[in-house]
Image (cartoon, rainbow, N blue to C red; front, side):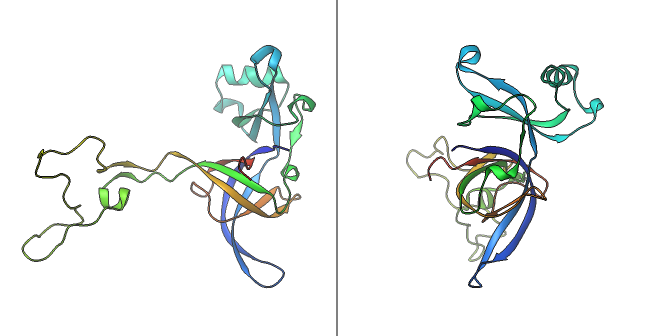
Length: 209
């Protein structure tokens, strides 16, 4: 069954399994999320639910956003995300989705916004080979090597060069759920996920498991 939830990245730690192996995990505060909108095939052409996460003060929302929550009859939320779940028909406005929708050993996909690194050079951005800094070439600091060829004596389009790096949406597939803490709304997944501590992430049942 497909499940989905909105969460906040807490950070990384490690867990020991039954035989003493160390498992690096990322801890996510997942939910509780409330159903703020329900879409159906008759009205929208597909089945989906919109989940809201994290309470927010009224002054931080626009008039349209406040009206959206008032129409649904739910508490104001800071983050919204639409999920296409298998059991959309059984969910109603105001229903609460918790981390218990997932189970230990399950495979999930996690989507987040990576850390923004600003304008960076080609060495850091694309891991290009660095030009030598000896034998009369210098003084050059972290400059990439040749960008083109003698003929046609120009740089081709789409060449990997310096520019904006990071701050983009990335999805990591097939992460294993190591542990669920229903009391604290925590889920621990094996490995790293995109984004900084405190970043918003979306957790879904794996599409390729």
